[in-house]
Length: 437
Image (cartoon, rainbow, N blue to C red; front, side, top):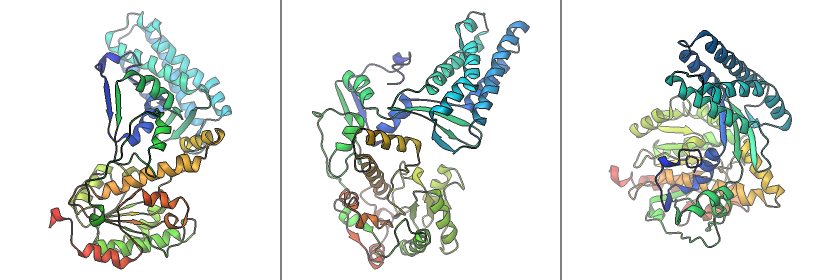
């Protein structure tokens, strides 16, 4: 959709049917690509590439371009400096957006306009500069949109990374554009995923993606035998997540569970704080290799975890999806808390506020269904084929005590549940996954 509206539509052949697998992430991907993003690193990289390309130009033309490059480079540095004492990730409020646009942003845009404007193309510049000229024009258009307030259904925000700041303009609701650019232009659109429904319906995904009422739907039973392949363990004796001692209690219970599973466990946390706290407490208490997200690249961690059958991998949300480790190496999945998206995330907070302003119930209409989809993805990490066996341990008692907790449990039909650690021991004593016997 982005390519087809960006002047390069011929790259994608005509089609009448669009099929989206893993369709639970369509909204997130649509919001990312239908919005705009630009980083100070991209601006610095552009100036560096231009400086290499203008060495052979005449002095006068080189001086004109160099002046524009200086404006872009210094403006990018100043844009970053405006955020030095601010949060790592937050919305661009009216005041900050105005100061960026009228200050360093204006300098950057003026420089980009010079570099990417028609004048640059008409100067007879060498062919190797043409891609750079096009890049400058593209960055100018993006920055112009990012530094504009685009109304209530868009969010202007930033995130600071190690050596760069990324600025975003992101749509909070993709339903209308999906209808306009996709559903209305294809004969059929098919959305499929093992985790597309919540609470036995497609109400959530229909509302988020703007699917018409007459769209056909179907929920089909899994071919996996969850009643014999899996077990959910929920302890009754742990403090609630709000308790100061929750992290320490989780650490002790992780040790209890992982000793029973003989390693082979993926432990997922909803925060880096709990991840690091529990890792510090358990790493010397377990006779297994305990891996931690951040200590090596994701691919290296997963390969080590897969190769060392008895290892334990501790990670956060980045490992909820896209982890494919069938067989014995992943026989136990432990989650510390129900995977609600943090309301401190700019996009999450903005979606909550937009629903509230529209008279909706953000918690039940957005936060709970979204968390259920992530929760179901967890079981998808554990049971990858018909020979897999595994235990999913949920250490958050709210799944049993809260009114919304039953929605999570009802999303796991046919999976036996226990509150007894001895049942976990008995499950694992039945032997490893059949494919590894």
